[in-house]
Image (tube, rainbow, N blue to C red):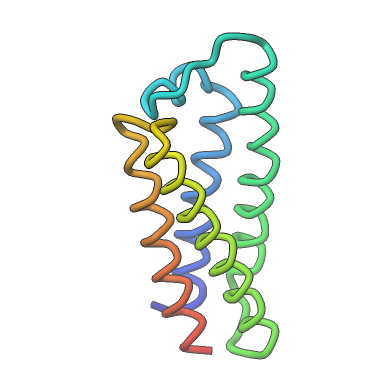
Length: 123
């Protein structure tokens, strides 16, 4: 896929999760088997939205990037980010923190890692 399509898709996915974890954490986290039982847990979910929203902004604002050394670094950074997401969410699943729908997260991050890698190779 071309850079614009990939970055639009990548940014949109991150934006949806940023908005959901900010506005409806009480609906989202229980699907993953995580209980939010106080104001601090709600805040941490909303705090996480900062980073998800930031990744969405970077992806969406750089949609028109042409293949270049800078594009390579962008896709390498997204690959690192998504690979860390895969590792951390697999850990949460193995430790029993994520249950139910929570196992979709490792699949999601692994897919984005593969797509980031493929996009990196095209640069």
